[in-house]
Amino acid sequence: MSDRGQASIELLATVPLVVIAGVVCLQLLAAGYALTLADGAAEAGAVALASDLPPEPAVDAALPGWADERVELERDGGRVTVRVRPPSPLAAIGRALEVSSAAWVRRPAGGGS
Image (cartoon, rainbow, N blue to C red; front, side):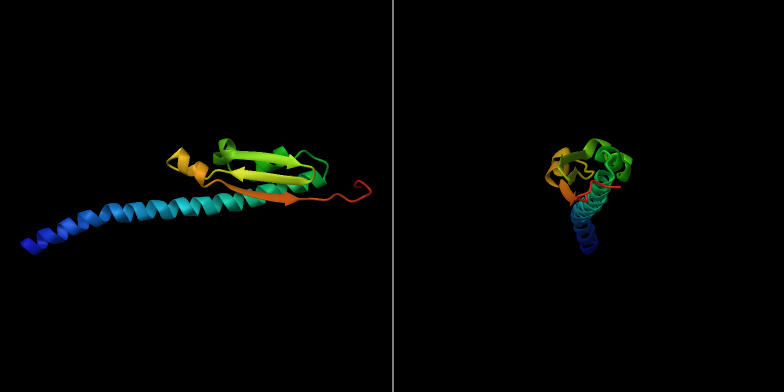
């Protein structure tokens, strides 16, 4: 009986650790996914600039709906920088894991087509 009770206590003690480890892994995966999204959005914004279009609609179209309130866009000449906060159960963690990506475009000297 004593061994069986000991095993139950050990199981109960490890369950929270396994859950915490799983949440940390999922949070890191979300941050990596957000970086991939930021890369694509920055590139879409730069392509829009190269086409003499505003980058904001292109960046918005390149991101999923959950990112609408979690994205910041900066434009400096031909450089487009996109910052995305990954989804997180705690807002502070999302802010700490914010990722950014930049793309740059130089238009031809003739000004385009």
